[in-house]
Every structure is written in C-alpha cells, then in structure tokens.
Image 1 (cartoon, rainbow, N blue to C red):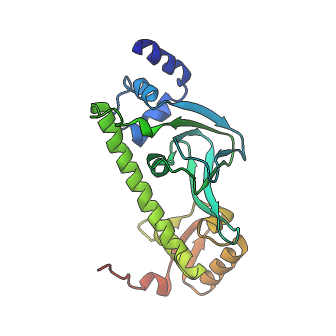
Image 2 (image 1 turned 120 degrees about the horizontal axis):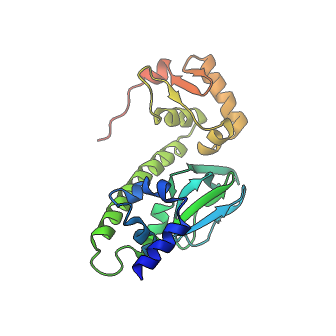
Image 3 (image 1 turned 45 degrees about the vertical axis):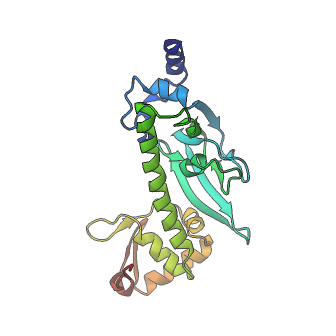
Length: 241
C-alpha cells in the first residue's frame, strides 16, 4: 500500500520534487522518504492566476504553502484602509508556518498571487498528533520550529518598523535591517510602491522623504543600492538592558 502511495505521489509531484527537497522544512529528510512525508502531510498542489486569493481575510489558516513558481504577497488593510504589505514570497519560500501551527481560526492577513503561481499546500497540524512522534516527524517538527522562529524574528522587525513615528525613521530602520556589503551599501529589492506598502506609507510620500534624505546628505543612492550616511550612520545604537 505504501509503495502504491509513494508511486502515486512521485507521479503527481514529479515536477515539484527538486524544489521541495531544497526546502528548509525537509532538511534532513532523504529523497526516498519525501513521498511518504507528502502523504503524511496531505500535500496538495494548486495553481493560482495573477490576482487570485490564496488565503482570504478572516478565513481559517490551515496550511503552510511552499511556492514552486510565481510570487505571493501577504498584506492587510489598516484602520485607514491603507494596504500594508507584510511580506512577499517567491519560488522555494514557505509562508504561513506560525498561523498554520496555531490553527488560527480567522486569518489576519490576505495572500494574493502577484503573477501566475504554483503552490504545494501542507497540513502541519498532523505532525506529532499520534502520540510519540517517530524519527521522521521529529525532524520535521524541529525544522518547523526553526522556520517559525525565523519568521518571528522577521515579524518583530516589521513591528519595529511600523512602530516608528516618522516616515524617515521607518526608512532608516528598514535599511538598517538589510545586509550591507563591506562599504555599507544595501540592495533594496522592492519596488518603490512595494517599499512604501512594506513600511506603511504611500509611494509619493516615501519618494519625497528619500529625496530629502539624499539632499541632506544622510542617504546615498545609486538606483536600488542605498547607504545611510552622515548623522544617521554615526548615531549610536541604544543598547538593550
């Protein structure tokens, strides 16, 4: 029976296996065991057209998704009905780990395909429910914990950005959280519109503020490469107690 299931999974997910094998969720899982894991986690593969909703506001959040192709944006609307971008996901990345683990009954975010997208959906709620987890489930649970922890760090950064009172401080905190090269330059991969949504502003206001920062010498800009300079760069960081 297991052999039949594995053969069926190998056929249905043949085009996904290379991408799934590289996912952090399956680190330490052999290629031979991967079909069994997909059966265990009730894997399903879905395609979404551009603009189609993968996860709606207020809907139960039951599955994590691993993108095989395309791009997905997670966002919510503020009390003033401004669209706030939470994160974007591309091929190979996973979304929804914390929400799916918590079995959130009403999703606080909406997930929308930004272009034609294929996603493998997995039910993480089945892991460890049969008593003592076996060795394979233990590996998956450990990996899942690491993913949830990483996403928690990201969301903490997002909260810190949105907690800034001024748009300039939001820009500074956002840029300060990116990985810089040896000369202090960072690469912003988001478009101007996406960046504005990510930090909770509007495109024109962010563009004006960044222009002022450049004029004042506190920001250097070369296309999508940027570097904080002047007083902002030299401002001492406050240490946590």
